[in-house]
Image 1 (cartoon, helix red, strand yellow):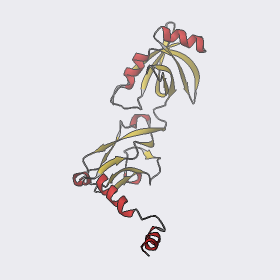
Image 2 (cartoon, rainbow, N blue to C red; image 1 turned 120 degrees about the vertical axis):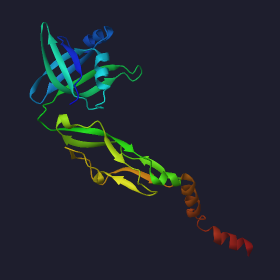
Image 3 (cartoon, rainbow, N blue to C red; image 1 turned 135 degrees about the vertical axis):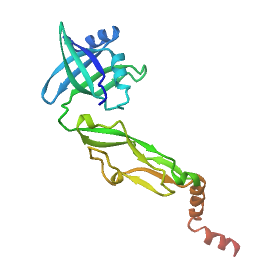
Image 4 (tube, rainbow, N blue to C red; image 1 turned 180 degrees about the horizontal axis):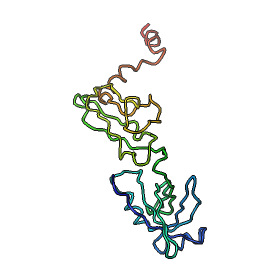
Length: 214
């Protein structure tokens, strides 16, 4: 089992925009810890430490050991980042929510899709289009996969892969079964040619030309 990253957090007393601005000026950001059976605790965390914990091989659904400190005491909680707010211009974290998870209770998460292989259809000029980039699943926290690998090497032009053709070990897929994940479409040149053939002369043009000849 992969070792969980540790993020240290300090309990904070103050709340509000003024307190948040002061925290950010010191290089920290406000955070909140909560859970279905846990009390809400306002926290302070180092954004650099938080981002490092999320840049692991576990992908976006990272299980974190959150070390909550107050004075000389501390306790650890297993959490996931439920929300991470960023400054749109500076691309810096502004606030985050930590949600407590129990390792024996099922969770619902979105897992990224990773397409594997080069489709047969692309060798004939087809273009691979990935329609869906994540699948929603339900599983135990310890069974969350980094990604869902889907082999598309056998796809020919016009072929598609749907959710119903995917299996995830130790998880239940919640995404609609008929949703398309990836498809190989015809070459753009063929599509354009087909569109040109399909274009009909404006209605009444043929009759008008006949009248002019008469």
